[in-house]
Image 1 (spheres, rainbow over the protein chains, first blue to last red):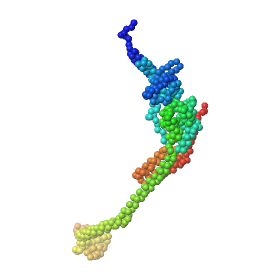
Image 2 (cartoon, chains in turn brown, cyan; image 1 turned 30 degrees about the vertical axis):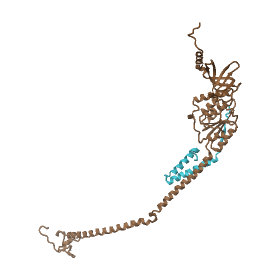
Image 3 (spheres, chains in turn brown, green; image 1 turned 120 degrees about the vertical axis):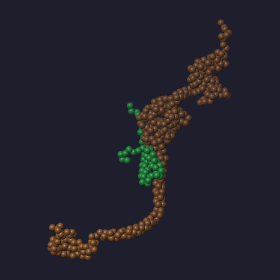
Image 4 (cartoon, each protein chain N blue to C red; image 1 turned 180 degrees about the vertical axis):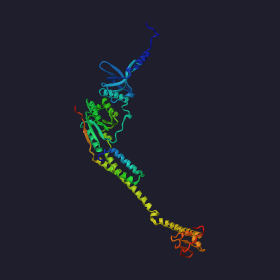
Length: 406
Length: 66
């Protein structure tokens, strides 16, 4: 029945069991609820205890690396929720749960659920930095979701009114705590979506700082993430960051902070306008003064200081030119006079009257026509004869024509 | 500006900054600078008045009509 060759050692068995248990995915991430007993922390920081319910017990270990993050001091009898994995310790042949996270049940369960939701949404990229939109610097329409008549809502309204009254404020009162709060906030976000807002503030407006549950609700967080304009979350507390803080485009810790983040500072802008007013006047004055200075410099130029200098020089030039003109003209005239005399001499040589000087005469009839033929004249007619020094008039008494005449 | 849609506060503030920058540029002829100056002054008065006279408009929407 026994075969020495097929039998294995205890170590081999425990090691094989370890491999099976630790290799099983179902045991590698376990959420377990139980009551603490025999809790003991060693100087190393490691904690050893048991978790039990009314029928069973399992040993548990929590290494120093995990106990360092405990948010409470565990003690026997505490109802807790832990996360961990199964680990086998071969030397003892025992298995235990190795705990990496432990919370008090109740609050702990909620925190673990929250942790899981947070991881899920983070994986979807809902908290990514590149999803964050810048807040509108000069909003015209701001929406506020907050507890009706809450101090926080009043803070937001008063501060926005003081800072930037040029805005239309839409208030969407909502429940902010209790079981019905998530649904009511989602409803308010839906109403806000219908107004084309520039900025939406989701605040809490007082209430218990313990109950931030609504702002960790998945539906609320998703509605805020999908909102068409930038969202400012003013839920918080410095310590407890809610999921809506993570998903919002901007997170502030007080209602006043929300008002400041959502609006420009009107007083600062009014001051800026005053400064600009002054600056503008200064610029214009400087410009005109500059021009005046340029004008002054121009006026000092010799042209304007001693205007006659400009034309004195011209006059001088002009008189020089005039003199040259006179000289020129007289030279031209002298030359021309000379020519005229010469021409006259030549002309007179051609003058028919000049012939008269040599004893010739020109005869004309009564009409002044030069008589070139005896035929032009009749007996009794008068004719004029031009001599060198005078004209005589004579009457024809006789006319003789040679044979070739008629 | 009677029937003309008024530009937003932000747009006018931007215009004002533009005007100041232009006048600071110093290359403009006097006439143009004067025109810009007048426009700037007008904008300042306008914006200051709007800012000082504005009153927050609040509307409460509970959506409780079913």
